[in-house]
Image 1 (cartoon, rainbow, N blue to C red):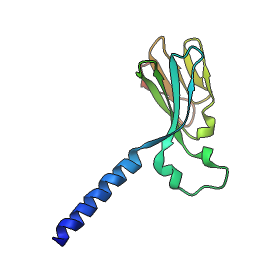
Image 2 (cartoon, rainbow, N blue to C red; image 1 turned 45 degrees about the vertical axis):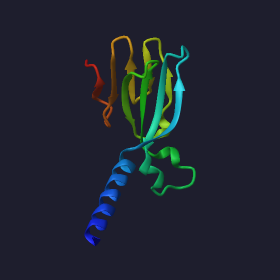
Image 3 (cartoon, rainbow, N blue to C red; image 1 turned 90 degrees about the vertical axis):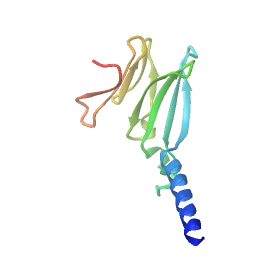
Image 4 (cartoon, rainbow, N blue to C red; image 1 turned 180 degrees about the vertical axis):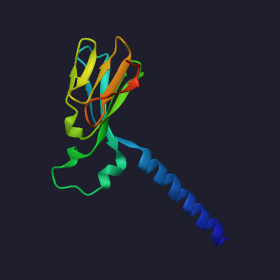
Length: 126
């Protein structure tokens, strides 16, 4: 009986840990001027529990994802820090300066590698 309870506790802890480490918290959302697209800036939930200096919560890494009005995923790129999510909407898509771009017309999304000299495509290709 004790081994069954221990196994149940272990499985429950594993399931809770899995969801905790794979879930995301939405930092903020931003809609384009036409209202057709929404950018979702998020971060891994477990990062909320890592120690940080006061006022440094926007220094944590995150993601920016754009969806259309039908909730179709148009691509997600990683952000080295949430504070860099300065999204600018363009005629054909959107861009985060020096980080990545979305082109809705040609259906691609990419971000730059850490050195800034190679495009990493998330959707579409060169």
